[in-house]
Image (cartoon, rainbow, N blue to C red):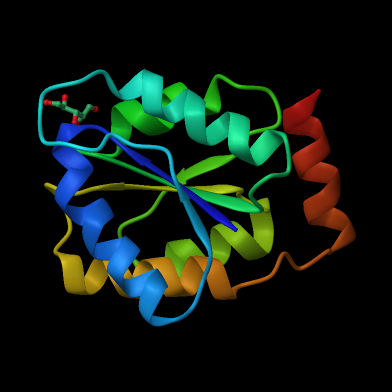
Length: 142
Ligand code: RB5
């Protein structure tokens, strides 16, 4: 299951991602926000990090206007590796090398068509399990 969260700036793109996941029969948990009314992105970052850390969801996707605030908030939580990606190369590399467990995007930065490709790349790329990458991730966690 994939956890989804956003603020008002990311609401429209989150809805696009939901349609996309439904079309691919991928289960998701919509952690909000549920309207375009102005709200605080750290609240939704925390809902998604909770869903990932509890293992209710394997991966998460967070969206705000830039993707910056919501990724900063998520990365404050121990065990979370949130990667801000607006291209498929980065999305693939961060899964393969960093075992990123959350994809962050900025809805005001990337168009929806490209964003869905980034989502697919992130969700379809496994962690490499390479010893050097495990070592580096463990150094971040310490
Ligand atoms: C909200 O206006 C905006 O600040 C937020 O979506 C995000 O871009 C913060 O980093």
